[in-house]
Image (cartoon, rainbow, N blue to C red; front, side, top):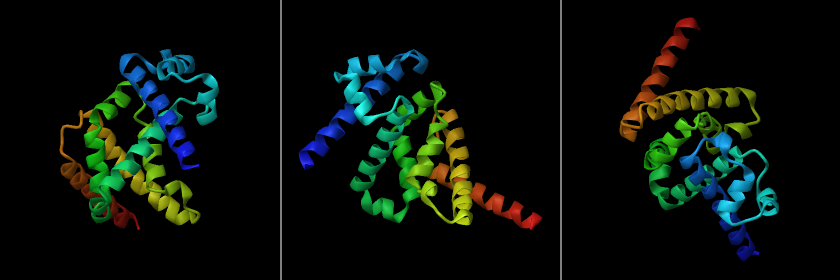
Length: 176
């Protein structure tokens, strides 16, 4: 059973990386599932066994997998400061982030952030809204960071996110 899971993971990664390679070469609108399959060496049946027709699923899958791998490799640092480590992870993959920006796909990062930081699974509406606000603020700063070509170091972006949170908290106090 373990071998089958490893094989499935390998197939999924091959398909995802084929799509990403094509995204570096041409606009997403010009990339077909058939072309992704040809590049990956797997057929359409295999593709649809693992993914839907929404090609964004490939970006979601590989992004989540790469974050899981990063967390496993840097467990102590992630436990100490998950936010900074996530920013470091993004910084280490800034070429990918910049490609998403060029392909007008950067909004996918918001969904990835929500998924990684668990806001979609919260049952309590109040906690979910608070978590969504936090993720939204983080995304806004990260979005600008990517639009500025990820020039700043992750530590600087962490400070900007913390400053934004303090600013918003102060504004909320004024209206409470």
